[in-house]
Length: 65
Image 1 (cartoon, one colour):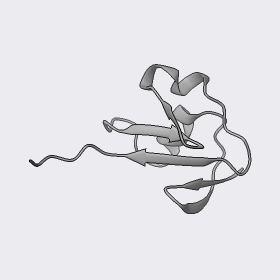
Image 2: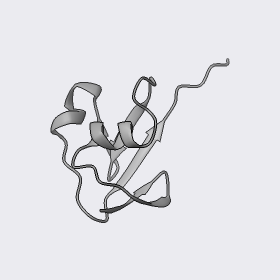
Image 3: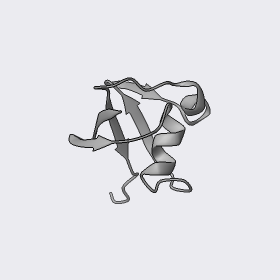
Image 4: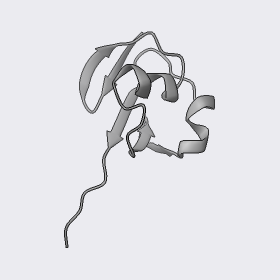
């Protein structure tokens, strides 16, 4: 399946957001996710399915003040 991850084209064999994070190396990372501009909470990643052409954003928290 072809999706955009943080604006870059990716070919993934994932069917949901959780699988995509695993495939991209974010298995244990603390990140925020959005699919097609809609926030996806961590507890809904396994049930949020991906479709060809989707845009997944993965954001890591930043420290600072």
